[in-house]
Image (cartoon, rainbow, N blue to C red; front, side, top):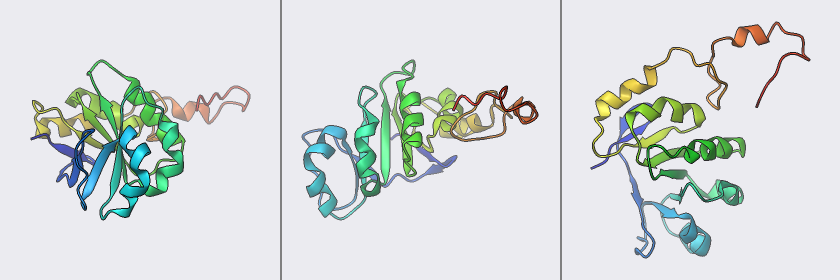
Length: 173
């Protein structure tokens, strides 16, 4: 069984991820593919339990903005370790105003966790072969990052920009 890490801790996963064509249970926390959410939104919100949407890395997250208040979770699938589109999607969701749980699923490895957190993820379903205790150490891999990110942590060199004249201080975000 895959392990859920949420808020940098091993957690119990109350969510059931449904595949297209599966019956939606009458109650409980469910994650449905975007196509199912789009087609059955009104029926889903009438059932008991929380709702989440699974986005593939090819789907536009902006289509969910109007539904942010109806959702408790958005999961982004990483089909391969080397496919980084989910990082950009996570960052975009946070910029669009998503405040709920943002979960990475699929080919999620320990080596990605620190960077995923910087992009806005706060929950991760590890690949089956990953040791959850070892994965938790990923959050302490670096004491201070160089790049600005969603997590808005202190970064190396950031103190210098505060002393620059306004026309020379560049904020890429």
